[in-house]
Length: 367
Image 1 (cartoon, rainbow, N blue to C red):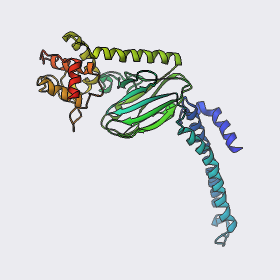
Image 2: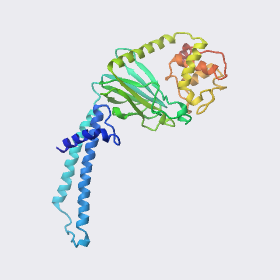
Image 3: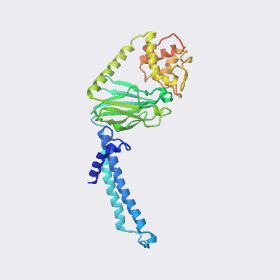
Image 4: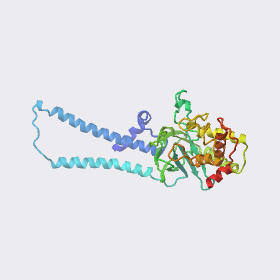
């Protein structure tokens, strides 16, 4: 009876409560978590009012100045039984809905699609595991301009919560997420989708969501993962099933096109144009928009960028252990890697005059 009344009161006030409270989100599980939270909260409020009410009543009406004589008993079997049995039944009443909600949270069965999520310092990789077609994989990077971060421009509405490639999932579909990490521990957290799961290197954790409303849902890495922990946001676009099918078809076509490009030979101009786009997206934040350096070493006049080509490929593909220079061999496809290496060797005054083709990257990876 009490549980039903509290549920009804919670639902009626939810729109106002979530302005200062946790949000029910856009999933049935999120709504159940919110309802459970509010139910337990009001049970605790009722217990608190009763306990403190009795305590303050006793302090006031049984104070020494009123001439009250304190009781002399040291123990009472009835009282002992009462304050053992009553809390027991209260805890059982709280445990039943909590257990039911937990069982639903950890029910990974009957998922209609799977997405592998890998945390990197500091970005996310999404891979759609498709049994009937080609897998689609891409990285999702922070899109907030450097000017906003360094306070040379006004901050936008979604400051530090915008990405170049959002995760896209269909509405009214149970999506299972397989969460892991490439380097350190991260945590994939989107509150409105009722999802928060640690991404641990060498382990794959499972979680899921079933969004009932289309929209854009934002989250962040929720595990301190290094100096740029605050710069790896999460954006999930929940779209109609028709729009999702169209988006997936386009992504699969892009993947097929990349495979064709892998076998081609590109001109210097083509590599430089593509390389600049890759550099601006993946390198400029550390090495500077003009190759002047910053968090990372300068590219302009760099002994790597103006030195042996094999050494440059090695740094780009495998990174530099013990430094902030990541291994980009798994983050960039061979076409983009060839383009950005070519760009670095011929931009910013380096003018080496050589080009790198996708086959060169492929051969270097193979050793």
